[in-house]
Image (cartoon, one colour):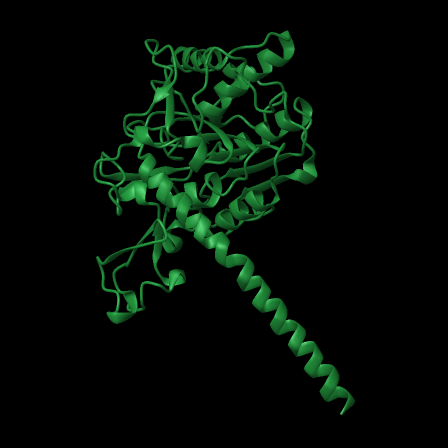
Length: 370
């Protein structure tokens, strides 16, 4: 049927219980799956809702994110972290969220007193309030957590490697230069190594300090890909971002407020900003099942920057984690289908390349002997 008439934008074909929708500008036939978008039928049912979708089926890894503020808020830089009583701060400046979190984490380490997820978030809120910061930390997750359970970065079930990706951008010499993001990374790195036993060889650092790899847009995306490809079931993974966060007009209709949350690489003037949809596809959705990923986003407008479906806000009135009313699980299901399609074509492409390499070697040997 599809071969009788070329596919046009907006055409829809149901093939083997999956739905394929032709994208604008594509002129190939609908059966050529590599050039059309693949989504499940559930995604396009007009009467389906996000509650019909199981997040664990579309987000393989267990992911938690602590953000320094809600989407509508900005996140503060601290000029003097002495008030946060860090054991060996890398410098006087730092992010308010990172500094508050570290103060709580070092308390847990020193006192040997476990705190729950809600305790950690509410203590962060209290510390920030004492220092006259109005930002409200929140916890989002790929799974519905009991926030009364003990907080962890490395779960008790971890049997694999502890890995980390730490990004700190001060935008040195640029408009909007910050002062504490490098120190955040160094302070977090010290905690991961000294307290949690991470090995330096498994920690990747991106900073604009003329020593580390630069946190350009391309380098950040490559670091996400590397982290996702290396991480396996049983691994405990930590991702930290300190830098500017922003908002851009939503392009695909998945944001109720009409804006995508973003992180801003050091070369934002040429590369642009990295949208939350990209963060999800390259990092969150790309992680394997059995991986535990903890993320800390110390930047403005970061409340839902990773598009995780469950949320707890440390506002003093919320007592449990609930499904975020703004979560678009149908779109995340669509993203998962896109990733599945990419994976289906990756192995055949690798096979073709290996075959071409083998042919080239045979021809080289044959012609060389001739």
